[in-house]
Image (cartoon, rainbow, N blue to C red; front, top):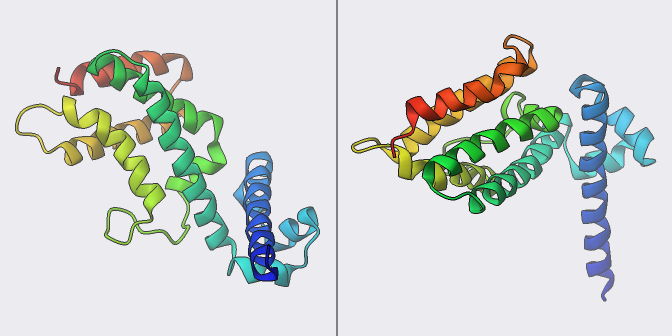
Length: 192
């Protein structure tokens, strides 16, 4: 292995460590606790080393969001591939989405609530974000109904899921009714 390859591998390893540490800190104490000073202390690197990888917290949030989007896409595909029939698939997808948001609140915030400097719904949208949307579209497009644009239906269903995730986490909706809300959402929106 050349010196250049070793340095690139070390750099990639440092970036993964920074992102993993930011996620861990955000999940433990919230995103307000994620500062370059805190990260530098936790990973035992100087702040200039952090800045050589990320220009600031915004880029770190963006990196966490991209990682989270890839994880969400994989989780959605895993549950939907095992489901039999469109209605069962969509119900499994909705449950998996809400479960991901509940289990990974800081990552979910990085993906959808915080400014990570990422473009959404544009040509320059990063691939992991496009793929997370594709994981929704793959399963929702077939149940949109005649004359309904699949992507528009997917955006609407996604918005409903996001609302449920956000309002439940903020304790604006009682969590014990989550399953009934999922059933209602699927019953009202899914055309099979």
